[in-house]
Every structure is written in structure tokens, then in C-alpha cells.
Length: 109
Image (cartoon, rainbow, N blue to C red; front, side, top):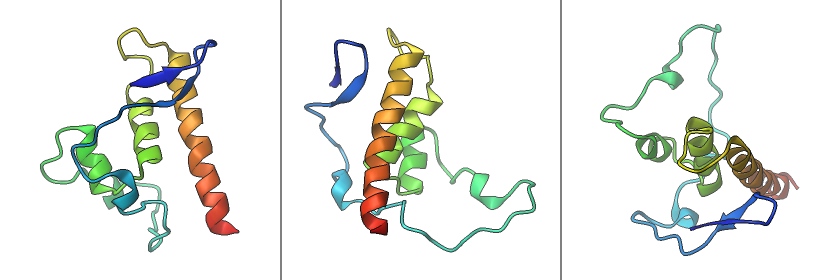
């Protein structure tokens, strides 16, 4: 269940149940891998994995962290969720981006 503050900002989720392994046991997609070179045209990293039918398939394929997966989903559905505004989605994106930034800052230290 999403938690919204009195100003309508997304501040977190409570009572979330996972059907797959919890995020802390999943691979971290924020770890740098081999750089991919591109000439600006179509490249392999834009190809969908075989059998992918929903966003969760892409999130799992890319081994996104919980925070990055939430950013990805909020960007995809931007302003389309029932009874949700664009500000709700933007606040959710910012909330998880700030959490992800803290992780990266700790990693770089």
C-alpha cells in the first residue's frame, strides 16, 4: 500500500508482499558492467527479452533494484494510474531516485 503525505507526495510503501525473492537478495543492476558502445543507431540493449510480456519481465531481465524498478514503472505509466496524478508519479520517481542516489553515494565513498 502506498503512503502519501498530506501534500500528496509519495513517501513510501507499507505491507508490500513479494511473490519473488525480496529486493535485498536480487542482483544489483546499478553495479557497473562492461560498457556498451553505440553509434547512436539501434543497439542490442533496446531489444526485448524473448517472452517478455509485461514490465516485471523487463525489470527481472535487467535485474533492477527495487528502487530502480519502481522508477521504471512510474515513468512507464506516468499520469495513467487510476486516481493518480502526474504529481503523484513524479513524487514517486523523485522519492526512489533520491534513495538510489544515496546508495550510489555510499558505494562511491
